[in-house]
Structures are given as C-alpha cells and as structure tokens.
Length: 86
Image 1 (tube, one colour):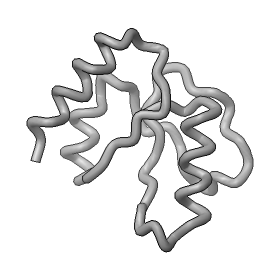
Image 2: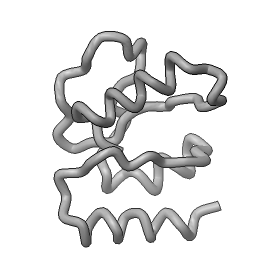
Image 3: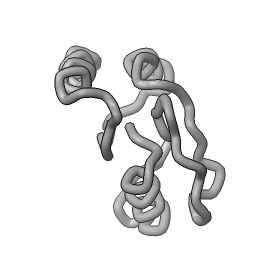
Image 4: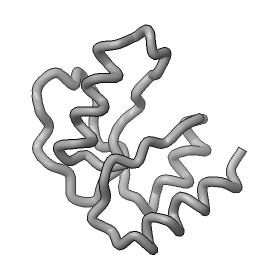
C-alpha cells in the first residue's frame, strides 16, 4: 500500500531480489506518484478502500504498508480489517 517514493523503492528492491521469494502484485494507492523506472509491469491495482477485496480476489498473503496519505487511524482501521481475512 503506497505508490509513492518509498513504496516504489521497496517494490523495486523486492523485484530485483528474487531470492526473497516475494511476488509483487501491484500498488494500492488513491493518489499514486508517477511510476519510476525499474518496476516492470507493476501497476496500481486499486485504492485503499478496495484492498480487502483485492486481497481475497488475488489470494494475497502479505500487504506491505509503505506510507499513506490517510490518517493513522484510517490506516490502522484498514490494517485491522485485513487481519480477519484468511
């Protein structure tokens, strides 16, 4: 979650280190920054409000929260909502 500078940097690091065993699906961000080089085909797949549905539909095991423009309370509510998913 977060397609700003930090989120894109984390994604690029994960892409370039396949030994980590992480398959980056995409970014979730309502106001993404322009995509930087080195991210391959990774795109914004939805907004934070869509995240729970995306996790279920795409069988996502982990969500990385890079930074969010949402308030801390909103971000925590979203993360807590994900805890109940399989």
